[in-house]
Image 1 (cartoon, rainbow, N blue to C red):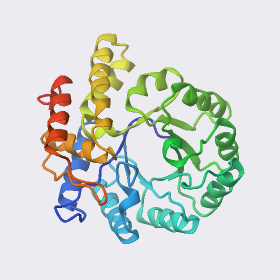
Image 2: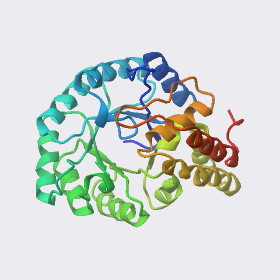
Image 3: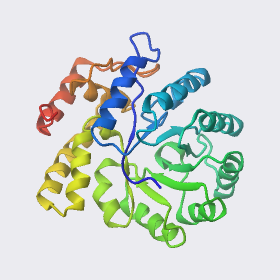
Image 4: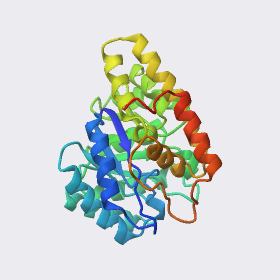
Length: 300
């Protein structure tokens, strides 16, 4: 259902930490114009964890209207309170979103049966397509092939998974286990550099943060892969490999991604929600050096 290059979109804030709707519109239009196949709002890079319920609802209504069906709109609705997850998922459904992306509960390390009940409860509450979000580095639990297959068997509107695991073998096992019974089920990698390994293993693409910075490079990589143009594949992969270092510039990495977007010439304020902090001059210089090394600053 979801294939190609999807972007977990950064949420642009003004200098006071409030939603910057004009800035967000610029970012959305840029991603669509450069061939991104779907947009996830309120994901990890979208700072879902730092936005209030009111901000999320206001933003959902805004992005659905702004995208205006040009590409699929996915909304991150996950959290630690199941009733709130259900409420936000229903709100996204009513607002006209195309899917909900639901991370597993975090804080306590839950067993597989508890995780199953969580997703089953969400799925039973909505007709909206659901993408599972596996990010064990943040949740301390892993959505393994057996659990994902069980959910995919029982709920036909659980249609995809974002597998943010730094191990392509993990994603390959998901692909092999689930697609054998649900060939329509989309398996996306959450690490940008795994696009080609994902596709070669039978997966469907990526949902990665660097798409905010260099959407055109990812679009070109997909086209080159389809045409079996190895030289273009290698050139694009080299740029992505260099820019993967952006994730290490700041913690959380959201600030570095926003800073890189701004340095690409996009007129936004790269601020982040507290308690995260603004980028230092040293970090801004490190970002610029990576963009120069990847030879992307003048590529748009």
